[in-house]
Length: 177
Figure 1: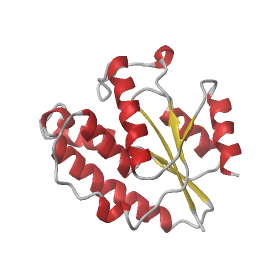
Figure 2 (figure 1 turned 180 degrees about the vertical axis):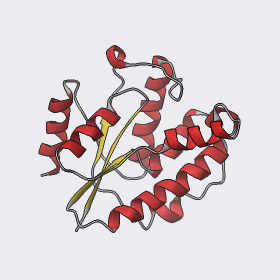
Figure 3 (figure 1 turned 135 degrees about the vertical axis):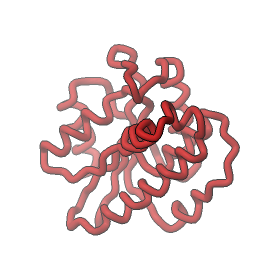
Figure 4 (figure 1 turned 90 degrees about the vertical axis):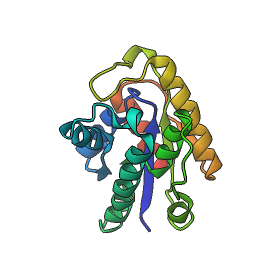
């Protein structure tokens, strides 16, 4: 049975670098799609879709992340990694104090991930760019919401220690085997 492993964490914590390292080692990964949604909105004249319309942003993201989940099932691989999951959407909505009626439970009650790895906030590597605008203080709050959201959904969260990309990747690989 396929293991669906999540790599999560607040902005600028090294997730994408770890995903790239896993891909180099031959592991299939479902890459983060938030930037794709942000850039599509910018093409339509919306600078920060999550800031201006967190519910719409989250609904679009939910649809795409659910599709990723089912696309992963079509691969013949024992382990697959996700750069974030459906549960991250819940955490970000909680961070933004957005009241919503989005039905996450319909998907989450029937579809399970296996292991959840989280990159903690790391001040030394934290940066801001065109799509990543959260301060380090905000990144810490997002981290806390992520941990709470995953735990509320019944998942244990495995913290990835600070270190080189290779060390962090090796940590994950040791924990999936």
